Length: 270
Ligand SMILES: [Zn+2]
Image (cartoon, rainbow, N blue to C red):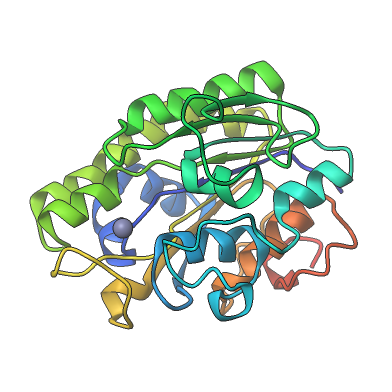
């Protein structure tokens, strides 16, 4: 079974804020079209280590991507590399650290911002390097990639929620409003994605705290949501680890020998 997958990583989105502020996504839950799970992110609760975790299934202590300054290509197979090896098409509208992990490092904004190269792990990329790059434009970038290249695997990775958290903290109107804004943007795209048969996986790398940062073990820094929307999901209640999301994505894409951990109970055929 092979499905096209859109993987949305809403950077820095705390679980409870997602539950309280994302009314559009909650409507899918209310109508039994989607399921939400609470996940405790791996440690340290930092961005680059957890991009690697989400996309390779490796916790930071195993991947070696242990802080945001570890600036090198990933040593692990990723959803991108496995999909390309299987002849699938990959794309990402994402922060430039994702390019550094899977395409080329260090990132050169003059040459690496937009890429179209079938030999790369991320074949079609639109990357950005400013944390306040508007989410609304980032989603439009992702939609451009989807419509133009019909990727089997598309990562959409906006940064404004995390950016608001760093400027105003977890318990702030600005942080909550950035989550509400992402929910509104999603409402412009999800109906089409669902209608066209995509499996949509929405999560976050880490949460946020009231010190305007993250990295530690506090509940608010670690608790992130996972929303699953699509015809392939069982909607069963299961316990999940962040390291199992990569395997779920691989399974949806039909990458049968991916060797990544996943929980089969999440899928209908499981
Ligand atoms: Zn952050």
